[in-house]
Length: 205
Image (cartoon, rainbow, N blue to C red; front, side):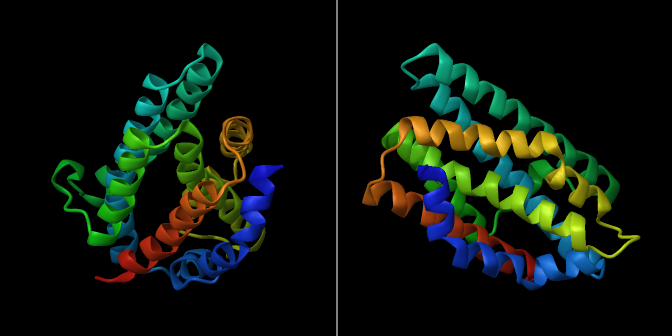
């Protein structure tokens, strides 16, 4: 299947994310709370753009089935954003005033430009890596993270069967609406590169 081929073709970036200091320290429970605060703020900004990309995907859908599937996935992203809002309240972050880092903005600009100007298949290729990577990381950390862990809620969220269903759902759409072309491969890989760069950016206080 296309989604599996793309994941394997970008396994190097997935492994680099897995070994990144942000993930390793989160796994150990030693991540600087200021770094996590930075992450929450930047990721909430990103998720708002991700939701807009879903909305544009729905608007450009040619069939009811794909529109309904995208709406279900958007609902999952809304729940994830709600989690970040809970974190923000606990950490005293005013999400509406967050200034995105250049790395975050590059990622969100890419998503929205793809949603506006590229094919539905390219949009799905750009959006799938976030879901699959986080599901994979969550499942990895659920097995290996230190306990107790101050970031247990993050690990539970992304290791949950519900999140795996969301990741599998967008992969099913990717398989249906995308072909194995250089454009699809480029969109998927660039999104994975953005994920890795995002982890580095939030470590920079």
